[in-house]
Image (cartoon, rainbow, N blue to C red):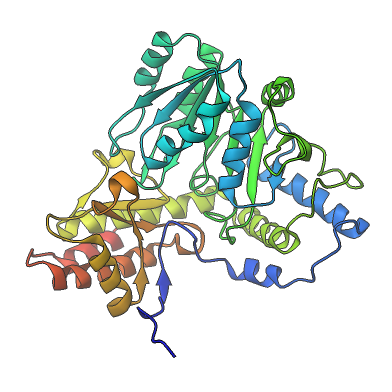
Length: 386
């Protein structure tokens, strides 16, 4: 039997997939119901209403049966039509990648780009809309995870609303871990597989009334397709047919994840995500390392990106963190690969003690790769003081 390449992790502190809450794991083991059983259909309607309450959505959110990449591509196809001019806001790898799904459906697409360690500001957005008054849809990646930066969503939403365009938001790795008001947002795509502590399996789409109207008027919006958002509009109503078989076990997990989120209290959940990230950032700086974000105010409460010192290979660093310390963290992606590592603070690992664990593993692995003096004691003290 082949020996495993690395030892199994004891602590998965990645930006996704994340650990599941125990309640979610138990719910995944519930009996798998028949989707046309009235009992299941009543459950699905109750789950949809619970989700609407948790999100503060004006209309009923849609649950698509695949991890959030499905939701993002489905919304690009359903919302964007041949009459639309799209402005894609790019502050990282994922924001840039979304342009590949937006562009084919639109009359035109332009980009507003900033350095991948910075954020899009309201002034930059206002100037871009002035230069492109034809814009009908603005797309934004709220938390561009490969950079660990969080764009100022409420302020940007206000600028988009002033212009009269629709705002499409990817908040996959932020919603549930930070406060996200849907005011001024026309479509928000997220999933339970990050801050709700569920497995990667479902997409959640919350759309405003005018976004629903826009999708229905879009002549190219898919129907009878896994990419159709419109097909699921009334699937939440008990007795209405599903477009295709829903992911029953994963819906059970979402139900438990929402129950936990609501019972703990959203404000409490957001606060512990923020405190964990603050502890991690304080420890990184006290240790003698640098954050990736150009300004600490740009850093997300759901992930911390750490700039690699010159000459430190990220694969070697992450491997040592896992094999010698049992801690798994995430690499960069594309343009940020081998420039940073990322520690996730999502769901079950959004507690400050996990920042201390990550700092300890990071220091130990760094000590094997570089002669640069790093102060673990100062890092732990700084993290504990938050």
